[in-house]
Every structure is written in C-alpha cells, then in structure tokens.
Length: 199
Image (cartoon, rainbow, N blue to C red; front, top):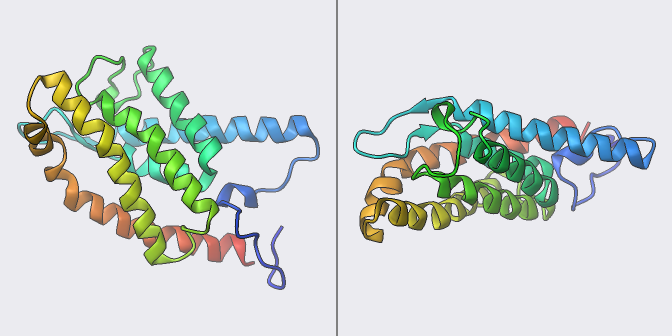
C-alpha cells in the first residue's frame, strides 16, 4: 500500500493499488472479480445509448467504459475483461448497445476493437500514461483509434459499402464525443492516482 513517503511503482495500474491477496488463490479470485466487473461495467455503460440518424452505430457509454477498464486493469486483465464482454454478448447475453447480442450486427467490429484498445491502453498505463492529463488524453485517443481501426472496416464489410462511406457512417459523427471522453478521462484518471496512489 502506498503512503505519502513511498512512491507507487511506475509499472503499476490502478487495480494494483487494491489490497494484496494473501494467497495465490486469493489473487486469482481478485483478478477474476476485476475481469468480470469490468465486463459488467462495459455492459451497463452500453445501455447509455443514443441513435445517430442515418447510422447503424449508436453513441454509447461502452467505448468510454472499455477504455477505462483497460487503463485501470492493465493489458492482461483488460483484454480478458473486454474479451469476456465480447464472448458473452456474442453468445447471447443482451448487454451490447440497446440490449443487443450476437455477432451479426454491423457494429460488432467496434466490440472487437474494444479488446484491442483495452490491451493498448492497459500497456500504456503500465508505463505511466494515466498519471498526467496530457498523457492520459493521448492514451485515450490512441485507444479510440484502435477501436475505429477495426470497427470502420468491419462496418464497411457488413454494409457492403466503400471504406470512405463507412467512415462517414461510423467515424466522423463520433469524433467530438471522443474528444470529450478523452478530456474527461484526462481529469479523472490522474485524480484517481492522487487520491489512491499517493495517500
């Protein structure tokens, strides 16, 4: 546990600040709970959904949740958490946007992108990218780009439209919202480090 006189290890993520388990089994149980909790948080955030006229991709809270989960848990647990979210939703659990499930929806590529983004921002967080506003914002932007790198081509394939048209439907309308999410994370994550990591 960090104190005012000791520094938090530079390769720690926020989840590492939780009290350590006394046994290996306890550590595994804690990690499983974190993974399941991150998936559940993403599923809940997905229900905060607003349709965008003319686009099959709604504005949701799941993108922000996926990036926060990856950053807070680190790459390994973050990928496991968003992987669980993807697999459970693809298998029929109705916790994708608008209580949807399955893998046939046109926006499923974004869900795949969440897994990639969680690994990316989790790895960056291990290098301290969530401890200052500027670095946190940069990590969120990179994570968002990773989501679009999978989501937009998948959308083009699913709708059988050119990539440029898929970008019009599933990228450009969301950039302002992504900038706001990055700004929110840039304030929230470094503040969490101050409150939890430098007590």
